[in-house]
Amino acid sequence: MASAASGQLSSTFYDTSCPDALSTIRSVVTAAVRSEPRMGASLVRLHFHDCFVDGCDGSVLLADTGSFVGEQGAAPNAGSIRGMNVIDNAKAQVEGVCKQTVSCADILAVAARDSVFALGGPFWTVPLGRRDSTTASKTNAENDQPPPSSDLQGLSDKFSNKGLSVTDMVALSGAHTIGQSQCKNFRDRIYNDSNIDTAFATSLKANFPQATGSGDSTLAPLDRTSPNAFDNAYYSNLLTQKGLLHSDQVLFNGGGTDKRQHRQELRVKPGGVRERLRHGHGEHGQHRAEDGDAEPDQAQLLQGMED
Image 1: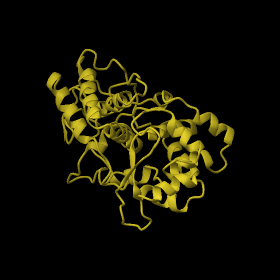
Image 2: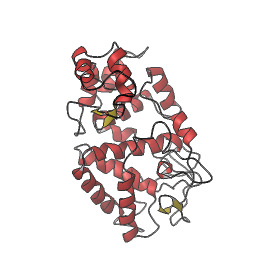
Image 3: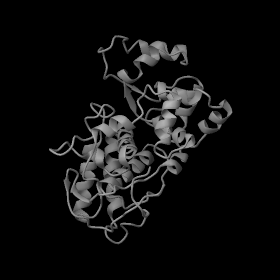
């Protein structure tokens, strides 16, 4: 995902300045996911929600200040975003081995990778060197994030606006092979959509009432087949009309997209997600000692990002 900068990230960015950074982050994340498997999905989601707004700049971690209203209170995040405590813990541990060197944005990106791996998914090399944003925007978070009610065109437009293709969109959506969603996000689908397996819908209706305001925050797994395993079951579910979210199921049923193309996309391996991840860094960011408190840069200034 792009941001207004120029330059490149590097997987060796901290090899000299903080050689123990990645192992320190992995230790914290592995422990957190072992304690609560759902946390792995929460960290992946946190990273995606960070990247999809103004690039992978850690802005989602910033609390509101007197000068801006941040992303945490935006509709896609309020009452559902999780994992900041794990990032805080990882940041504190990293600060103990190399003070004011590693950005929170990089910690979040690595934590997402380590979460996928901890749940049985692939391991990939994370380019590093992002700069932490010093501001955040609730408005941008609400305007940029695709809601769970999105149709195929709406999804395609949101991803296209970030320079991402349909292939990118389908691969990144595969992260929904882990995690859970609140009833308010799928209630309309199970009661009103036609592109849903009847038995699947009926089983959900037994636990999730139709009345708005009743059990809105009650959770259901996005992938009932293997909710805590990073695998291909999400795509298999879509082929049998068992996607939990409307915005998931339209990847297979929607609009003018050719079925054969979709079948090819839906066969993408979980490892394909790593090929689709785009890493951004903020235009005016800084490396922070703490997530909400900006400190001067302690590493090479990055002025660009990969497209």
